[in-house]
Image 1: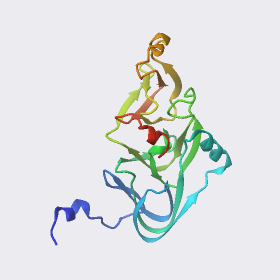
Image 2: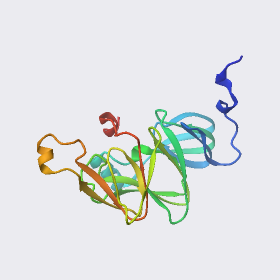
Image 3: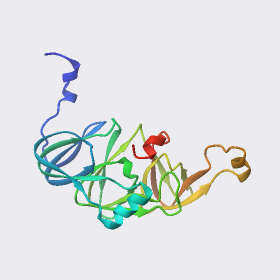
Image 4: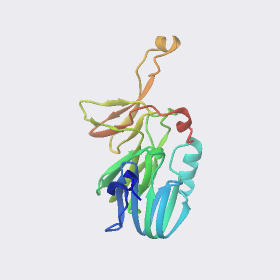
Length: 225
């Protein structure tokens, strides 16, 4: 049987070590030897002896997620084998966190992560009840995190001399040390005349970077569908 479908870049090979690697631009392969965590429903294939279980978030995290609609619906993958994760053909990126690093990510952009990472739902100060929600997922520790983005992301440096303003429906994540606040970029008169569609943004101050998707979130995606 002959086809470009069977090109070498499309054929998977056994993992050489435990942990996650990019299978291609749209999927992540995780060689499990014990446990990992992933977005619920993101498994597209696996081989080996693996079990998938819904992962609880604790009472405090569950209440925050119930109130805001934000957070992250997780599953634990346990056993030994290989599993492939993907979600709606979004682009995938692996972030390698070192001790002292911290990354704040919208729950909708998290694909999978190592069990060695700490995960919390944290208040986004100044965001109010904007499209980005009150709470985001904050990762820290030592390990790898797979992040998704529809389209090619914009990674914008933030410095004390150059704060960055982002649409709350477009932001993917940012350095956890950055300070956030709400910024209004149009006058009351403009809002009364129908507005520009760009009334309020999230302002980020400090030293770090912010990751932005190249489009605003569609309403059905913002609702978690």
